[in-house]
Image 1: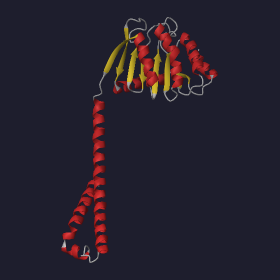
Image 2 (image 1 turned 60 degrees about the vertical axis):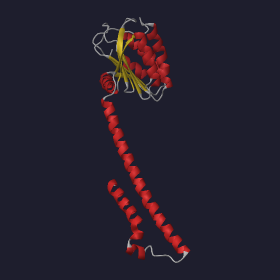
Image 3 (image 1 turned 90 degrees about the vertical axis):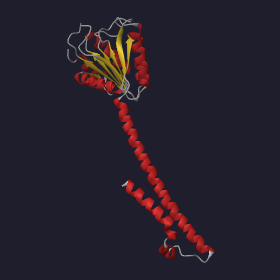
Image 4 (image 1 turned 135 degrees about the vertical axis):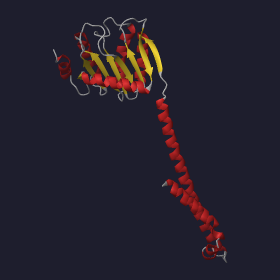
Length: 263
């Protein structure tokens, strides 16, 4: 339809331009004028029609160019997504906490967190881990437009810690906590893979083989939208298997019942 209008406008512009030289049009429409006012009126009409036709033609051409540019840009973006760079970094425990906390501060939409150690961070945790958990709650509170969800491995020790977290996050409207049941409370490494995600753009696989060892490369960071999106689907599956013990509006009594209800 746009092409048809462009052609129609171009033909109108051409026809108007040659009309003074066509005998019938020249004698009946652009008849010779005998007065200055008549000539001025005819000239103004002719120039005005020329500008109208030219303006319509230019508008249609620019609109067509814009549409084609947007289509080509979308195609380029689609192609770019197919070939998004994959940046993979090995991290030590101390490097992970620094890297992840910085990304949480810059998060715009969501942060998904897993904690699958059978013990709270303060029990045998490194200085970096303890410092991180002391600071992350304030980051959550300072970013109310970012949704934070934390999955915690369900063990007796972690249940007490979950209650402390809930008390610390009471009154927030962007924080959620779920407890995930594993097969043995005493086994260090559970069944689920610990994934951390920020905004479908970066993901971390944490404590892949073991929790301890500050000098070991135990974690990996992956900066790629497709990988982050797929790992987020994995997190969503774990979240559905968990029981929610804290969400906006939930009071202390309901949270306590949700945590200890299975005992």
